[in-house]
Length: 517
Ligand SMILES: Nc1ncnc2c1ncn2[C@@H]1O[C@H](COP(=O)(O)OP(=O)(O)OP(=O)(O)O)[C@@H](O)[C@H]1O
Ligand SMILES: [Mg+2]
Image 1: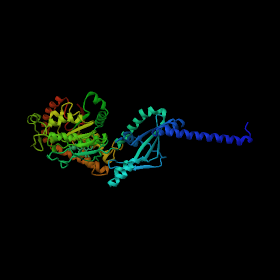
Image 2: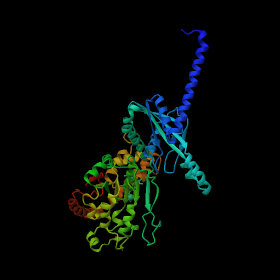
Image 3: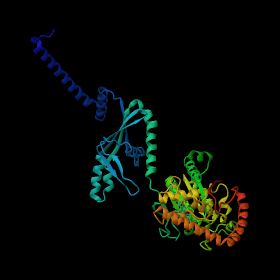
Image 4: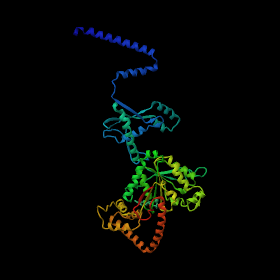
């Protein structure tokens, strides 16, 4: 039993025991300092402190901005992903915008925390910035020698994300959550990507031999065409979109069958039916950059190769008006003479159709991924069969004159008017005239643009279509004559077409169609 009278004795005993323990610890420590090499001290002390600290149930992954000299892709993906996870509780945000981006982006500031849940796993992200002492002092000395210190300043800051979660979820986080972060980040990147239009400026960088260089100049592709705004048959649009979707998700398939991951589209139809607009709609849909290749500015196969090899993946290579760019019908002549005519029969003796086709089929498509090539022509019948043979252009798309469904789309785009919901007195008449006329979507669009007033615009269009009809009727005789010639030509075409298994050139009227080779 403890009594007050024993207290002084007990206190003095405890004090002397503590004093002798402390003295022994100091002795042990000084002996350890002398006996154990200095390099091992910190290791032993940290191991001892680990033994005496209770085990944490959480694991923290450190995601540094750089991995060695290169950027850490996990960091970049996390930065994008976390933008979508900012909560109203976040107190500080960073705001930025670069010329290549369309929108302002927000990201969390240093020290800020973001919570996330994935498959019932709670995760906490923290953004940490610290200044790197070593690079700071290096920069300081560098700055003394060099006034241009912007990059050095940047590298002196070390940035990372810390991702904390319960230890038992480590595999799930690494195997499923991080790939999910990557996928989401890629989707954001795609959405934000500004599509570029690359054209070759012949004045840019001709080399010392006077050969065209492979330098492309670029601007943002601001073309507003989308599949929604295209006046085409809905079925045809759907078929094109499905074809492209299938193409981009078939990486493994192309690898398996040993085929280059490329797809060729041939767009053909009269001027003003939307071939160029469709290319823009495809680029906007896929977020692929466009390379507009003007064959007339290229002097040789060698030049062509260098130019094509400087195009990037996930891009659309466009060769417009292929029948005008190169005189391609006499392939035999081309092969015998190894020359083609460029620009009104100026022979150059070096850029050949076979050179173009072989290169596109071979080296160019095999050294890149997700390449699309589009040829356009107003005269499919004038193209060399070498271009039309199966396997060369995978899909043939006929862009037709305006149809009634095309007119409805244009009326909705240009006038915000939907005839089905709110019929207009001229609607039926216009549809009838469009069915029997050969007017292009470009002509219809031009008429609809003439007024914001629906009545005035539709009246103008009806008058235009009637005038068109009268003109046609007046020249009926001439037209009949022409039609006979046309019919003869069609017969010859059909004969030609059957050879490539396509079943008919869609010249003139028709609903537009897509033909897979
Ligand atoms: N199918 C369409 N859908 C929507 N707009 C169209 C369509 N066709 C043409 N247009 C309108 O007409 C304009 C010209 O069309 P576009 O340049 O795409 O025709 P094209 O077939 O490429 O002609 P060309 O053979 O002369 O190069 C476009 O800017 C667009 O406003
Ligand atoms: Mg065009």
